[in-house]
Amino acid sequence: MRKLLLKSLVQGPLTEPAPPASEAALAELAARVSQVSRQRLGRSLSIREVDAGSCNGCELEIHALNNVLYDLERFGLRFVASPRHADVLLVTGPVTANMREALERTYQATPDPKWVVAVGDCARDGGVFSGSYACVGGVSAVLPVDLHIPGCPPSPTALLRGLLALLESVSVRGRRISPASR
Ligand code: SF4
Image 1 (cartoon, rainbow, N blue to C red):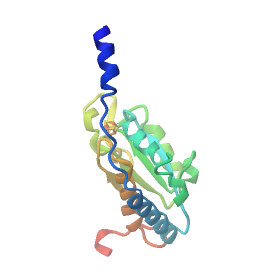
Image 2 (image 1 turned 45 degrees about the vertical axis):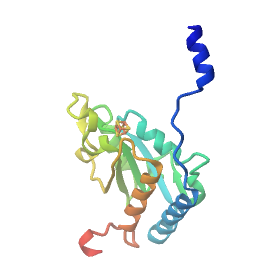
Image 3 (image 1 turned 30 degrees about the vertical axis):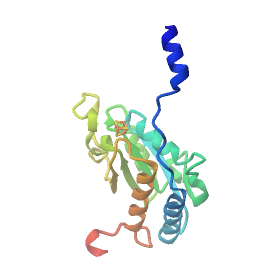
């Protein structure tokens, strides 16, 4: 025990160094999302996050969008507490049987135009939880999905890129443009 304590004092914590943050690239990406949301929707972007049964790994990355490094609210992207105020439903996890009705009711409560973004590998097809008796599948098994952001979990930058891709596919009146008409 004493040996282990001494070793841990000398060695320090065994953690990986954080990847270098490219603040300029991030600010540019977030500013672009803000600009496109104002052009296409005439306002900033309001997001309602729905955990349909995730392990919370995806939530940690989504929460990071609000931390001091990313601080997305300065670019007009905000998370809202009610689907009635939302433009985008950001849905994580496989959809569990227990959350299915809540997810459907959240979608019905969101005003048009609205978009559903499935976040993470579980949201695509159930991921590691696929086949569980407790899951009904990916988000598309319950709701029409406009965009899927892959990853387990996707990074905050990947989330921002996904939101930008979604907004760029939206017409000025807020309708979705099919790839053929772009
Ligand atoms: S995609 Fe990965 S991090 Fe996200 S809910 Fe599934 S297992 Fe968790």
